[in-house]
Length: 272
Image (cartoon, rainbow, N blue to C red; front, side, top):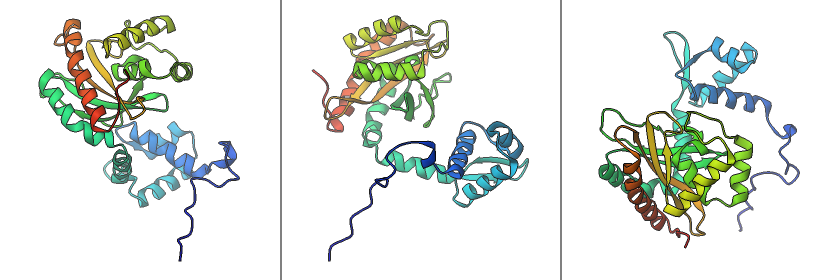
């Protein structure tokens, strides 16, 4: 007796992404979950204010999320936080991203070789999403906890991906996200960013020269899949007083080598 066919991701009648195909209560609950994830905890009144939803709606959503372990209530002060269920969901995402597992050893070796924090990031919704990091033991260090996001044009891993994306994809991301400034050294025009991406391709790695945060530099290189498409980026970051521009350039070959090692480990191919 044959097994029944598995249902696909959506019914044939709902192939569009219009408002009528969303579940309002779920949409609101996920919005509240995101507010909690981006904070150190919020009270019911703070969540109500920030979400612009009725207090009863917010409370019902929180209780529902609490039943599934996605949020939890800290009694002293009645502050809501993300719960262990969110970690389990995030871990499931990481399981299907084998690059995270294969990158661990090269990341640890790179941290030892450079003395700086190493991070791994992918593109998600037009931004860099950091999946993992290996921290240096130095007192002053960069810190990118898993789940942190950032604009792609402002950081080394983002620029490493943009440099090897098809021109159409890079243009679409920049058009959607814009070129906001974070420091006086941020690249805020298409012309300056294009020149930087061209230099990145030429040397094989990207440099963030205090473009995301004053006093911090970073170096990153892309990781490729079997079709020579960039799927992730490995990066180092550290304070500018410890990582001068000459150091960043010198570390570039180490970062590039680590990226190529991960590419090989996942069965990828570096573009020729």
